[in-house]
Length: 141
Image 1: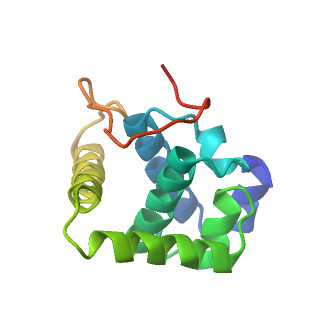
Image 2: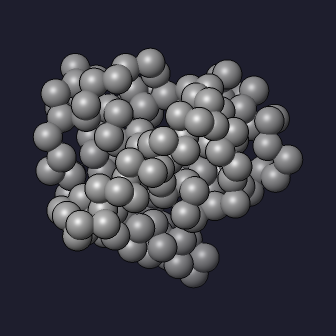
């Protein structure tokens, strides 16, 4: 499903735009193209970033598992549920991943506040990339 068709899949345009903002922000931070996380690749780095996006979408929006799957390359609700659970299980142990996701979540909240008070660029200058080991050829340089 391409972006235009995905947008019509949602009844609420604001939820779609919020979801797109999350996807773009995480991809920018992790140095991935959005097409990589929407693609079929199961390479570790791409899959992990995709699962982080699934988790953040579920925690920060009212999207259903089906809607999240549609945004991320037509993944099934079961796949989305598995990805979210994998992040939950991994972060229970207070890992680096937990701190990284918390910082992403804080950044998203900050962007939301800034957008509601004054026009700001979507990606703040000096954003640091994540340090998740990625081996995908889809990673930006």
